[in-house]
Image (cartoon, rainbow, N blue to C red):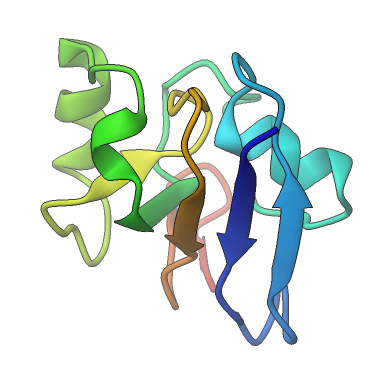
Length: 113
């Protein structure tokens, strides 16, 4: 089973984590199921950017981005070439290394992390 290495984040995962990640599951769901409470203001329907992550390793193994995700990512803080919305990034058969950005933009709550 693939693993997701979550790099340390001061709020959501201070020590980092290594998670078992079943193929076919979103990165967001895997984090939430392992008590990493990443924000997901739109309830994982690709309507916000609060679950934005940067995939440091394994990016090419993920499913292709759809246009809606690309459009939403254009609004994300700290966008990088390997950025994904974790609710849309589906685990395949390779290990991933994921960084949760320092800040997110939550238009609904107008709160930054």
